[in-house]
Length: 307
Image 1 (cartoon, rainbow, N blue to C red):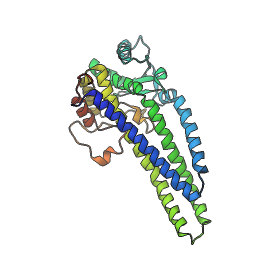
Image 2 (cartoon, helix red, strand yellow):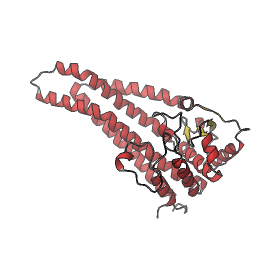
Image 3 (cartoon, rainbow, N blue to C red):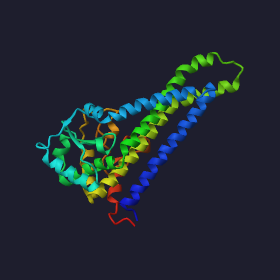
């Protein structure tokens, strides 16, 4: 029988499987580039640069994201109900109280950010506070606290590093392949074939890396849904919130491609209406799972004890 606990374990396993495949992919890409250049120094430099940049962005991620989202601190005297809900959920989850922010936007949405639980922040839009009832709001906030408790920020940062490695290495290879190819012996057929393979991989690699990144992001949303439902013990509230948010046609003005994956639901436009099936080729380019799949997973959960 499917339970919250089995679904949570299954999603964790799938997420780490995707990260493992990502690592294997990067190693394979590095092998091809090293074979073409007959040196691994270029890839090592790319890895160092990517790691340094990613660590810097991760360390100040909460401040950067809040500025990008145009979020302002939510004062307790103005948002007492919001604070009470988050405090109760944080105590239940065994997490420190995150810093609370509000985004002035009629589109209902929310997100969590920060490098760890002790430095986490949660932002909600004014549209979310206006449109959802208490049980629905609890479901959304439990989802965001689950991102914090599940250490999704750490996993996301690791994936950003891997995507950065691929992007930098691919760009450098493409820029240098032309003058490298010009100096290569025209009779060296194996070398020319290897160069062609390297160019093809350099073009396709960032696309493949981004698709893997999106897949990991979607798996983490499923995990946060099940963890959030476990926290509130009421998956119907989260499912109802998903239906309301997905049905709202208004895009979030402050959202961007860089921050879209952080939000509770697709911030650019309304998702596919519940009950409609999303085509597979659309799914692979989505930052979030289709809303109908998230609702179906929540409705099929069993709140029975962990056996």
